[in-house]
Image (tube, rainbow, N blue to C red; front, top):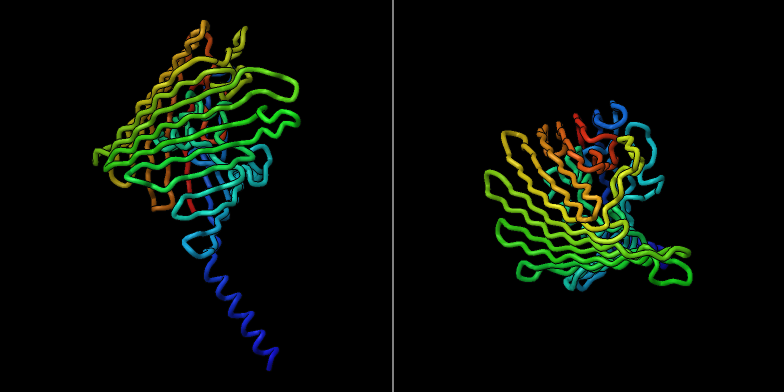
Length: 353
């Protein structure tokens, strides 16, 4: 009898735990034909993760009581055309974090997006993907990456339309607590149809053996929904070594002297999205002003159309062109690639599950 009662109690306890926690499996599978031109050679290829990086993710939460929940997320990036792992072979290279969520805010620990990247991606008409990707000309963080390792992030609750987040990423260089360290933050304000974000990022470029200057990036973004269309705006300021690295450092244009990454620049983005039928027209213009003596400015023109077959599946066609000046070497990439020339055409399909 005692064994029976014990089994019932354990079974009831397990049932309660299951009811209080949940795990969701989700993902994106994105494939496209890509034609890159304008560099040393024209490239035609079938590639994965053009509009959105292909991924397989696991996320979950557990109700701890008192309005507090434990949460986690593990997100793997993969290449659908080859079956290989993305993000340099990392198992969960897109994101990997665990934390606590309550009415006082959210605290997360692990590999995460930087606030500056989130601020830019949120107003990019192309969603930080396809040939129109803002990352082609706009720095997303001090080292042109969008994620931070060894990160502690706090996200505040929304108060009168305002919310914010701050991050700290340990450099973990033995004997030097500042080397490789990253700091960032973002303030968001939402009122009616207007969303404004102000974000900043700092990265210490020091290593165990090399001492150099830091990279500092700041950006102001805005999105306004007029109903029949949306207007997109961003203004960024990038200063310091590694503050605005080109996406392709292999000198794809074959200049006698390779382009010099800017250490002092600003960038302006103007964008437009116009819904029409079951799809939406996309357009953006980005101007990068290199304020160094090299004066290697660049302009990007991008246009495209996204057609929704359903809420989870869309077709897309995007074309982008970069006008490089004074030996600048910026290339047209996509969500996960840096590109090989200053022009690119994407024709693809994305399925979200």
